[in-house]
Image (cartoon, rainbow, N blue to C red; front, side, top):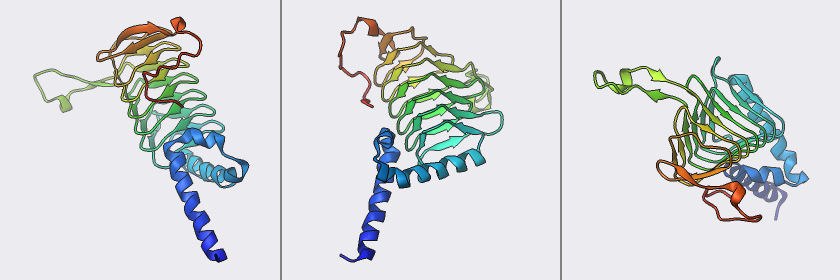
Length: 223
């Protein structure tokens, strides 16, 4: 095998590894030192460019997929705390405030409307969740698209686990340590520690009542 061939194989391997990290960013935090030699500068360039072009603040040791879309014009900032990640094909439009050690997995949509979305530390959001902090007017006297939007904001507490395919409507408060089951539609506030599921979501349990080591997943995410 020639040195040129070896270099080409390494380059293709690195590109495939970048794609893997984009869709499964938790792997970034498990990289060996030899892989961080290319992954670290790669992420630094992505994050610096984003912060130059948009009103975005990114904390330390974050991961931002180059295949996600983050838009934050002046007055609608996006902020990520330390060690948070955003995976591929996720759309974020500010104002959105994301705490420390937050996971936003692939193909999610978050729009802060005017009032914003706030996500507490250590919260995990599985793939294909939709979180919209605004609503259209629905008067029958004119087309919906011509009516003014309203925005009350959404607040998600710390250590919350939001299952794949979940929708959260404007005005919702999700308490600390809550769990939202897969494909739920959250239309009412969720208390601390509550386990909710369904459309519309309703309380089906409490995390404090689960035995140590309880592993049944309602959420479709294990990272």
